[in-house]
Picture 1 (cartoon, protein in one colour):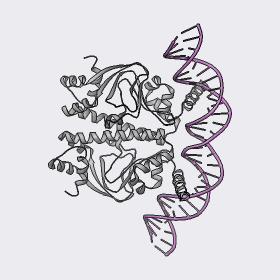
Picture 2: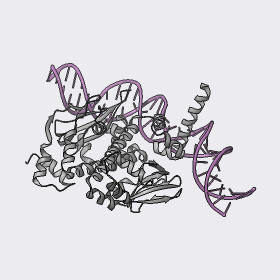
Picture 3: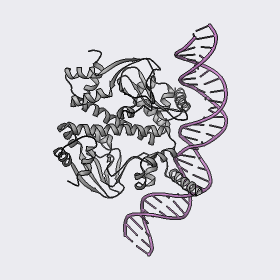
Picture 4: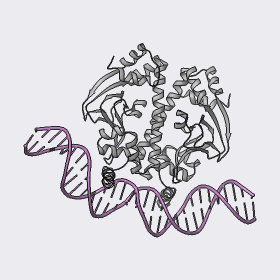
Length: 199
Length: 199
DNA sequence: AATTACTCATGATCTGGATTAAGAAATAAA
DNA sequence: TTTATTTCTTAATCCAGATCATGAGTAATT
């Protein structure tokens, strides 16, 4: 009960469910421990699950032909992660999803998700809401990429997601923000220097 | 009946509805004619509707403080458009949405959408599906921006959306792809020149 | 504890694409 | 049809941010 409360608290932010519904929802998930550096999604493999992070940190990324990697999304406690495109269309993955720390997740199977949605409109509503919000979020990210400079994107990320900055490696953050590791390092250092001078 | 068939065909791609349900769905929309250069969404105004384009072309864009504008999305026949973030959270718009041609749209009111969803789970399913797909699409766009060069993004757009290229002005396409008008012009001309040489 | 592999910092150099400028074409308005 | 406005082209110059190169700190692995 206590263990399942995180995901139940989460769903209750969106829809009002009773104890029985909470229990049905809870049992649809499988709890899994993932060690640091372990992959939960890999290119060319099926993506049977989406994951709710109970504790830990993950990184989803793609690797180009030239071998450069680009972070598509992060997830820490209370966030979801998967190769969403592959999961939704039940195709082979094109991304890696890897644990940045020893982590604990709740895995939800695609088929199980469909069953939940059919079984109870509230569950459908819930998944609809998080998809809608996800869409709005991704669109904001597209706009950031179009309108902001590298430095502005970094500052903006710092303001919006201070918790993430402390838990993800710098190279991963750089590739999420669409800049090189070296450049992000330089931006950070620039800031530190300024602070020193401002004393 | 014949007139309403576009949106009904559209929803039937996602959920199976009978004639009565089709009729309910149909009457939720208001048909509106929009002249070229007319705005249907403007910053600081409420966004009561999302729009399904029956015929025509639209462009959603943001304008930065420096006065540069950036295309967030296009829509032609059979696509949806609005300031999605503002619509979803029912806040004031931050974008412009303008008609690129004389157009005809079906407007769906936010409150009406909520009523439809409550009234019939199929409608909820429908909106859920298009949100999920929208999310997957936006994520692919983020990945394109991270991994591809300006020229690759242009080529990719050409392949995926040949119909759009003929109907949207070049400056709008450039700002959608995240490059300057001049640079897109150069890319296009480069290609033409190559073709000439290849004869 | 030593070796190996990641991760971050910093400088030097280079380049994709922006900016500026100035016309030319094409559309719309008169 | 003329004038005004919008859109597209081409060339010259410039710069944000990438790449390359090197070293140093830090964490895994033996």
